[in-house]
Length: 153
Image 1 (tube, rainbow, N blue to C red):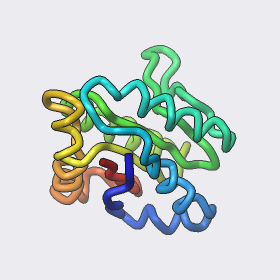
Image 2: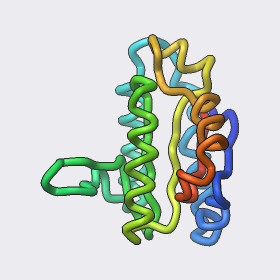
Image 3: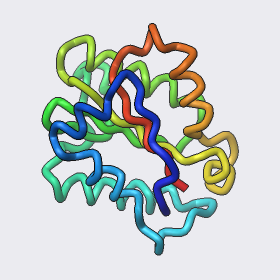
Image 4: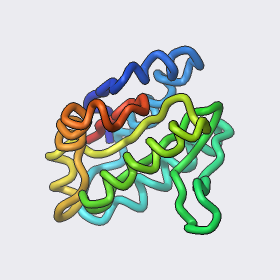
């Protein structure tokens, strides 16, 4: 696995850099021994979870107790979400991050997803950074939470 690119939506980079976490975050996706192939999403998720836990991130943080909704991790008014599943889940992830932002629980977020080519290796109709990046541009005035889109392959 390696970092492919980062897309900065609504200046999220400034919030990550202010906390000196942007370089650390992108380094999480530099794991040459982790090969992208069908069925490896559990390995990806375990690796990312372990790296975040080592740095003190709260994992699987509930955003609503009654509905049981959660995001992958939260720390220092930042939310992090990883999506390696079906493309239909990605807009839902954006909605959860937007909710946390509007409710004042976070100042910025990051969403890590595979590139289109990598998503094709992982499975059928897997969320991909290329499409999400285009949707963030389209819904620029609707999705206002600062998001650092981290694309990996």
